[in-house]
Length: 484
Image (cartoon, rainbow, N blue to C red; front, side, top):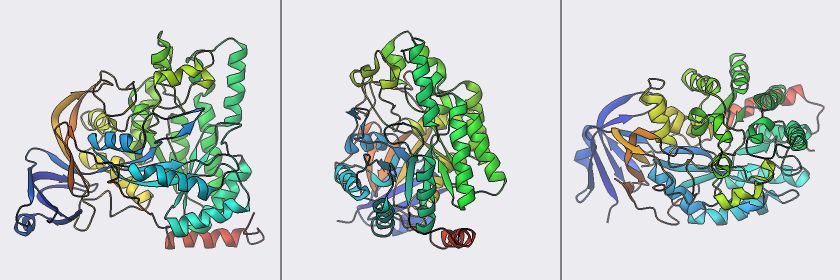
């Protein structure tokens, strides 16, 4: 029996335009759009009436951590529960992170994450973190790009004595990424400064969650972002900065882009709407539940981030979905530095950004599609398979009711986490249906996620564009040995 779905009468929204049209999905792909869609629909095709609704490309969350072992525990959401929650919120694709232990083979860690992800309900890909360096890492990066379709690598500039990269590793890994046509990404916080400030605060008797933002002020993020941007500029390699939270880091990205450098910035839904006062809540559990890095900032920083999305100096939105329950967060009851870092949000991201962005006039519907789907697809080589409603693209779609509303709460979320950082926020504009691979997986509150239905998405290297950059770099650094 043919898997066919006809969506009738919706307003199709892509990153470049919107128009009213029927959309036909057959065997997991978009088969036709417009007048031909209904004529070509096979007998027995499922039909959805999208009148009065938008039809959007499925959301892409380029920054998640499912089933992550971190700070002595493991996140509550695994690849099934986390991606199922995403489907309920309109996110149909995730890019998660393989994070090897110190001295662990990249290929061994990658194999572990691939096995964990087999239960995913949505399509997925991986970034692989570079947490140490020797010739095997150099070699494994090549294998990952050329044989496994991993075309982006993560570098933590924070978390001293754990997974932090020093400048030597950044230089070697960035250069290797350039050779391979892969995108380097960075978590930009100065790990040495964070460690120093944590110790200073402890000596002053500051042990509660209010110490978390004080140990990670904007200057710590800005310095690391500027350093990574400078290294990337010297080597001639593009750079993607994850979870930009402050105006100083966003400004560094904007200035680099204005000078012609290929630098891209990601902002989290939480950083756009949640204020730093959450860390001063009298209830430890509530304050600790918001501990993530970088921390939430003041309204002034939020407004600057919105302007970055509006202007195009910040390109993508994500969640850094990394859920820990109250019992896990309690590990830092007497020392904020031991509170596991991470918050949820994969189910809420799109509705929060629509409500705070489109409803306020900050973003148009097309700009919303760009920052929640299309730009991530383009930057991480999933486009036009993902992030676009066009013939031949994957049938990952969201029917979006701009007038429907919902109050966000841990009591109704699909994530396994026991806290919702958007608790009590009422949003206007929510998904009524989510379609993944041409099948309805969420319909008016009914989540139909299937364990193992998600597919691994190999992402090829960037080819000619990067080859030209690589040629420039090789000319500039001719005496430099290719290998470490």
